[in-house]
Length: 277
Ligand SMILES: [Zn+2]
Image 1 (tube, rainbow, N blue to C red):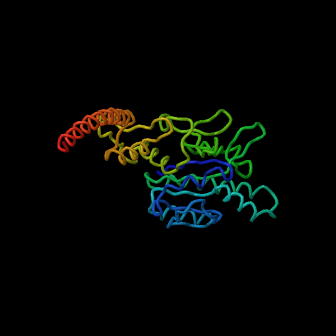
Image 2 (image 1 turned 180 degrees about the horizontal axis):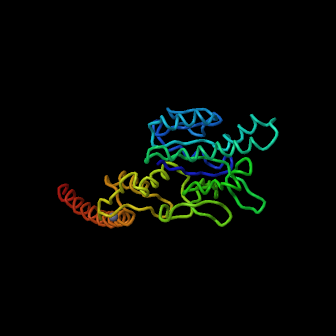
Image 3 (image 1 turned 90 degrees about the vertical axis):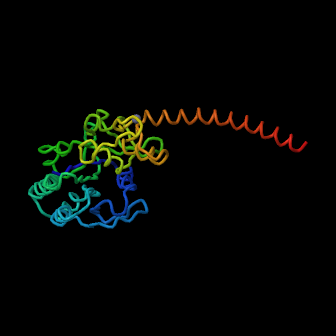
């Protein structure tokens, strides 16, 4: 059973940009409206389509563990436009049912596949933010967010592009307890993917090279970001606590080193003078 994850946000708030850290052969991208991505990586496996049967086939045939559909709101909007001249409510029922079936179809995928649904956000008359859909079927009968255990929202704070991981009381954001340590994290879908895989046991926990305990998320950093960063600096993954200890030791070491160098320099200097004399 694959895992569907919903990413909500206004246009230009960093939904597509959040894919930037995936490698070109790490994901299957379903580009619903065939739009250009706001970064340089050209993903190798891309389906440009707003047709459910094609998307379904693509998802079933893919070999990547990450599938991103950008953006799912246009699946609904394009179907609505194609059928704009039809009278009656049947088209709304179909639009709702097709989308519902797409989310449900993730269940038929292998258990280590995560499908990210990038979708526009809407503010209702009560000021609550929720997924932007078309028709009341999805809004009232289904509540789309109920089909996902993780719903993140893009937010821009002081020029920083972030994901909200929990609700602020007026939106439908949510994530399982302990997956993220902070209300806001960097809008990095690859880091989110890493965190989800460890959380759901799709990938083994990363063990700290110093204390032997699992590396955990800390503040706005996910476990995989901390492990990657410490591996780069120290050659082994470290937990936040052990990484802090190393930084402290290095500073103390640097101070001791400075002392040793100045002492040594003094002695060498004296020797040079002695030789010179
Ligand atoms: Zn440790």
